[in-house]
Length: 96
Image 1 (spheres, rainbow, N blue to C red):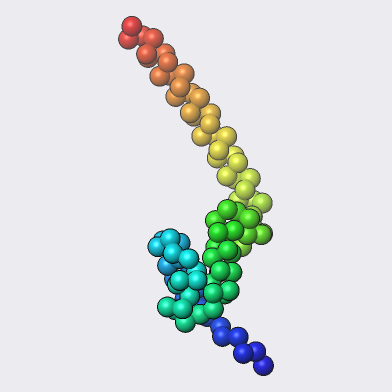
Image 2 (cartoon, rainbow, N blue to C red):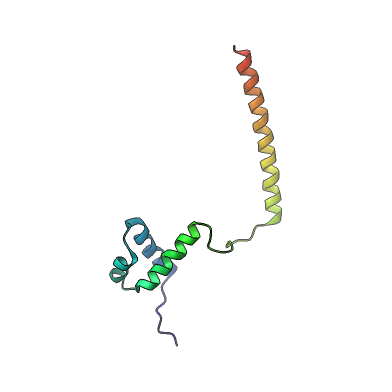
């Protein structure tokens, strides 16, 4: 049987936000919340790693069909953008 308390994800997020938004140290915030400094430091570290993109593998895997569709749409939008650049250059030249 574990004597470690369990905290909800919402509680952890609130505790991390308190540290991050206030600029205070985990050591000064943890006693106010009644949690260990070590736990709060770990939560803050995981949060910062997640923000930096170093948090490991993504939660949702990429759907290959959706990825291909998005690539096709990107190519289409790039072609449209190139066309609009040419048209705007043509009309800019005509106004001189």
